Length: 161
Image (cartoon, rainbow, N blue to C red; front, side, top):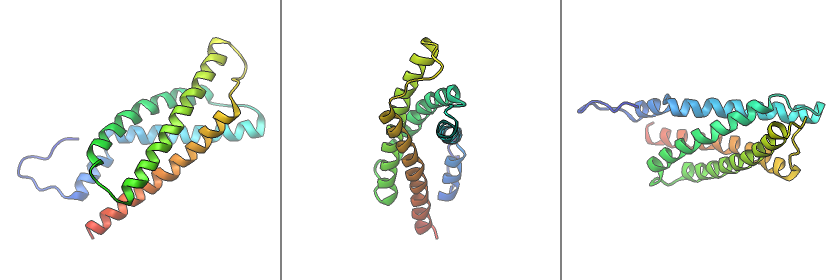
């Protein structure tokens, strides 16, 4: 994100608009959408047909999402750390949920790699409890990330009517 020229007055709305168009955030949102859609397809297909379509793509996108999220969250935390309020609390819950989903996803990805790629098995032997924690954590990510964005927008609306 380019800095405004010296002496230029930039509104809070313009700064927010620039941040919302930042390539890192757009990449994060794209990967999160891909992971959410892919995870939902895998979840439903596994229940309905006993298959896991798109599993390799889901694992690869999950690794990419984890890397992008760590970079994004570190930069975001350095910027917002001094702030307090509802948006902060909900953001921390979203970050913890994302860490839970990413860490359990990486563990499941390791099982997939070990069983399917190295072991050439037809299916990965995922531990049910790990899969359950990953699925629940993923749903919490979507819930708290949406709530965090809503809380930030409500805060901004109060500050700039």
